[in-house]
Amino acid sequence: MSLFDKWKKKDTSSKMTEGWDAIVEVCEKVYPNQKEPLHYGTLVSWKLGGNDPLDGISIYDGGDYWHFVTFGLSELYEKESSDPKISGYGMEFTLKLKKGYGDDDAQIRGICGILQTLARITFQNGEVFREYEYIYTGQKEGMDIQQTSLLTGFITALDSDIQTIVTPFGKVDFIELIGATNQELQALQNHQCTVKELYQKIGDITDYQRQSVI
Image (cartoon, rainbow, N blue to C red; front, side, top):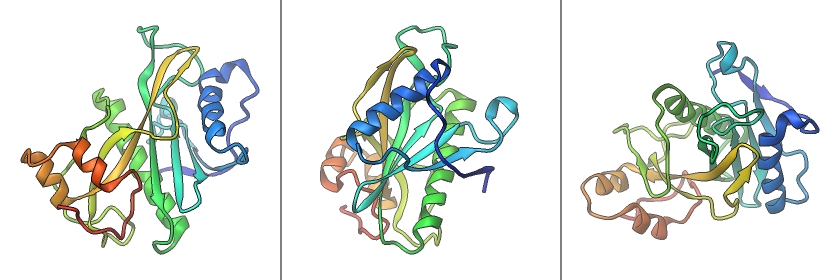
């Protein structure tokens, strides 16, 4: 596991955190009673040579699921990219993980690790994820801690709850990752269905216990 740990979210009272503040603000519109969500922050930042590109991941309690929101794919503290209309890579990741599959704390840490891995792809290769795409590596093991789930990859959609925002540094879309089975991902690869069609069948909750719909 890479170097991140659980702590309270950053103090966002400074003008130097305008991008961070904007993400918190839109999340609090969805979860107005959760001012201090569970938060995993990076111990050694990417800029200082750390392995984790995301500065933090907040996890909100959605009732039946945990709602993950990343901080770091957009510009959090200052404008550095050349496009004034887009903040950083123009996105942050979200994910809704259904509760009740073994050790919640371990599964939450597992998802945080996956989000950092995907963010690393963006930071290293410049790959930007948009809605209705799929992420398929060909792996057969489940993405859960026990590696027994049928879910092995993801499809993407715009988060149905957290709306696109425009921060002082530009636009940010919230790209939701939704777990998909190997069979579903192969169907997408073989053009047997579209990502949008699959999304309409499985919804936006990542459920480690669900069966394939294809």
